[in-house]
Amino acid sequence: MAKVTTPVSGTSDLDGLGWIGHIVPAGLGCMALIAAFFAQRSHIQPTLTVSLVVVGALLVGLAYASSVLRSRAAWSFLISLSIVLGVMTLFGAPKIRTLVGIPMGLALVIPLAFLAIVTMLGSMGHRYKN
Image 1 (tube, rainbow, N blue to C red):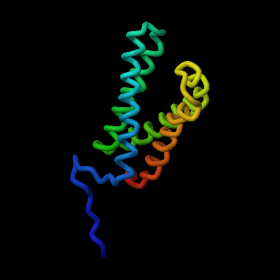
Image 2 (image 1 turned 90 degrees about the vertical axis):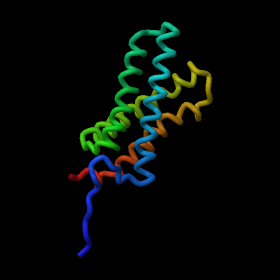
Image 3 (image 1 turned 120 degrees about the vertical axis):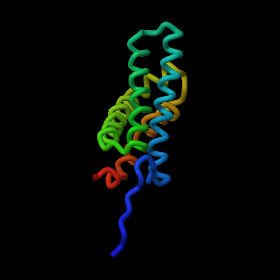
């Protein structure tokens, strides 16, 4: 019979896909916080600044709680938040393209990143079955 070992608390049992699945949302969260700083400095609608801060902080915090603390609630909330943000940025890509002045293919990179996050984190469900 194979011996089953569980990782010591505070250590990580993530593989490469798991690390990427947690680093990408943390990176997108940091970019949202940077965008919030520039939105605040340019005196754009304060609602945009607040929503960017909330989304950025949530993405960074949930990625940390899911990867390091192994929180199943954080993992599932990170997946659902990524789905919502992916759909929002998918339908908002034409507006982003127009406002920023970038090609449509480049505007679709953000929803593709959220799709990748959902796929990678969704494949890690076995890790959170405890």
